[in-house]
Image 1 (cartoon, rainbow, N blue to C red):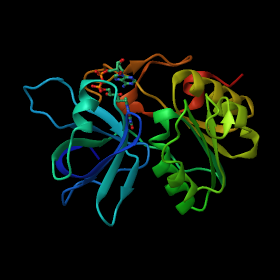
Image 2: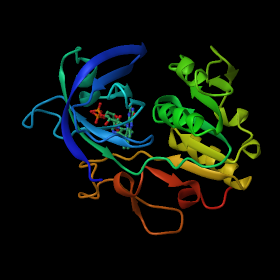
Image 3: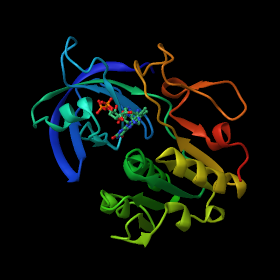
Length: 255
Ligand SMILES: Cc1cc2nc3c(=O)[nH]c(=O)nc-3n(C[C@H](O)[C@H](O)[C@H](O)COP(=O)(O)OP(=O)(O)OC[C@H]3O[C@@H](n4cnc5c(N)ncnc54)[C@H](O)[C@@H]3O)c2cc1C
């Protein structure tokens, strides 16, 4: 289904950790239901106001009964600063849901997230659990973890790694990952972490999905601004062909 424009209403917008916010919005009647791994282009400023472009943010949680969608986002620049200033009751323009979303596969799975890359993995973990897939989570943060309890509510085991050692394992998520224990590994995070985790999983012969980020303008596959090189195949557009890809598209067959 093509992405739609709609006007949502902000229900909550609360700080979860330094520069990390959780925004819950009510969708209007008739708005399409998003899948885990899809994203919306968000905008809470006028067409003539800066920044020019809407900002892509992943679906963090979707509640089909209450018709709410939540976004977990990190304040980085002008667009996300404007989002962080939104009060309950404010209007939020959404274009989406866009992108392909995750496929639910296997009997056992692990979601591996780094920092704000954990954002799209919560709805995925919920959908996997609902589909009967035994799901673990390995979540990495620089120092202060966030939304870990939400993962604990749906996952069998949740392990946390922090760079500083403030919580959980002091080190990288890849120190905790044993890909051979799972049928499917789903990864989202900084490129260096995603590459390492994906190469480990592919090297172990495990089905691997990565959710990629690229700077994007339209979010709909029209401008080609988010076109990325792949390992050996043709370039892909992250917004239309992705953002979820089989790991082998970018990282070959592993280590
Ligand atoms: C498909 C997709 C899903 C995303 N989901 C989320 C999400 O769930 N939560 C979240 O916090 N962020 C997410 N992002 C990243 C988010 O879109 C950017 O952080 C945001 O657009 C920055 O806008 P800004 O105006 O605040 O910052 P800008 O002023 O545009 O930039 C500030 C800094 O952020 C960097 N930046 C800008 N865009 C990106 C980008 N796409 N990726 C990485 N760095 C960027 C810039 O290089 C610059 O250093 C997603 C991106 C994509 C492509």
